[in-house]
Image 1 (tube, helix red, strand yellow):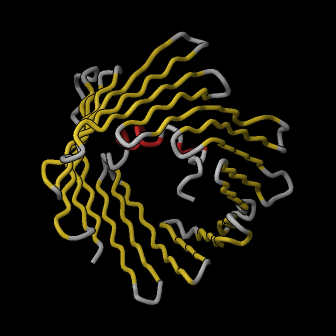
Image 2 (image 1 turned 90 degrees about the vertical axis):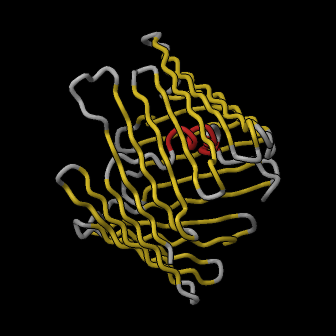
Length: 276
């Protein structure tokens, strides 16, 4: 629903995406194929130091049902089946991994014009229960989330937040880490014509009274090229250049330098995503 509030997990997401999305300091290759019958195939390879990881996933869409199956380097098989409108405004998904027989999980999402509710329960004798909810509108939302581990009879998380979204800016205030940290984020679209935007995120930890922050920017050099920068109080600076060299195919170069690690070389990463 276009008018309903965003899910709790989306509060502050716009600023987080500008500061973190597409940054990659490994070597990554992705090939995606989509047939006219609704069957999609994606192969991903990742080289990290001297290790190579990869997976192949298939995605099939039929009506309101999506089936996603992924096989990774270690022969683990992950399956997820999603059914939309199983009830009015409700989406359900069941997922599991083989050979992990305790990995089964059921997710249910309900969207209302003034509320968004997400729930998750593990399909095992001692499941992990998670529930998040947000109320409001597409412009202003207030919500929280809680996680409970029945095996240890303890809460794994309880967070709360408020988000404000407008066409040219977005702001969020989140109480995270079981109430131990306060995080504020802001993103502003400076120039809609060339996509220039700036974002900042600041975190205060109550137990240690420590503050940390990250600032970043994004700018479109032309309709096919985007440049991003990021700076943190820990002395790390990063940049990213992404080029759409053919329709839906992206080449991304990332670099990060740690000014406090004098003997460490800058981290460099390349990512190539092909969609014929």
